[in-house]
Amino acid sequence: MPRINPVNPAAATGETAILLAATRAAFGGTPNMFTTAANSPAALDAMLGLFKSLGKSSLGPKVGEQVAIAIAQANGCGYCLAAHTAIGALHGLDAATMTSARRASAPSAKTTATLALALAILESRGGISDATLAAARNAGITDAEIVEVVGHVALNVYTNYLNNLAHPVIDFPEVPLAHTA
Image (cartoon, rainbow, N blue to C red; front, side, top):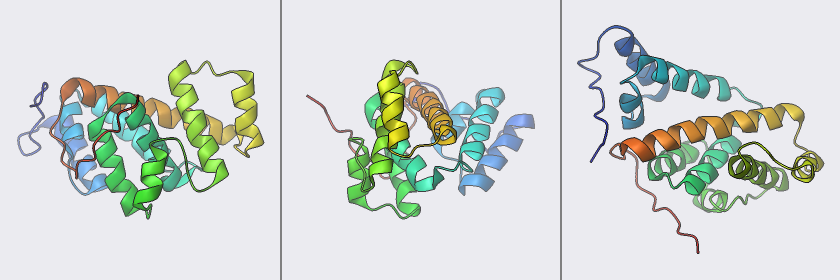
């Protein structure tokens, strides 16, 4: 049961209505995470801006979704894990690749290094070691891509924390979180 009531798009007014219409246009609907964020137009606008900007990143949508899956798993966000697994499939990721992303593993060495970098950034709150940064660069990750990984981590921390706090109803096919020992 949601801990923060979502905003009904049909009843929204003003800037909230405009932002929810933009959400519908961008995503083909208004997922519950967005209607929850719509309680604050400023928060929803920030979220939409990050999604729009990072959607144009050089990492591309497949890597971006794998980063989102890895971060959702690490943060225990069932909503985002379900959402990004569904979106990843829309971008052509197969089930095995998305399952591997939950463990920071991917078919390509560069994507595996990108996922490892994302989790290192998450776990260290950005204070990664020189060795971790060097490993990312040695795997072919450019400075632009490193900055974009930080952006993806930040966006996913934002959405994970909002969902973990608010408990919106998951409106994507549910994916059970893997439990680590």
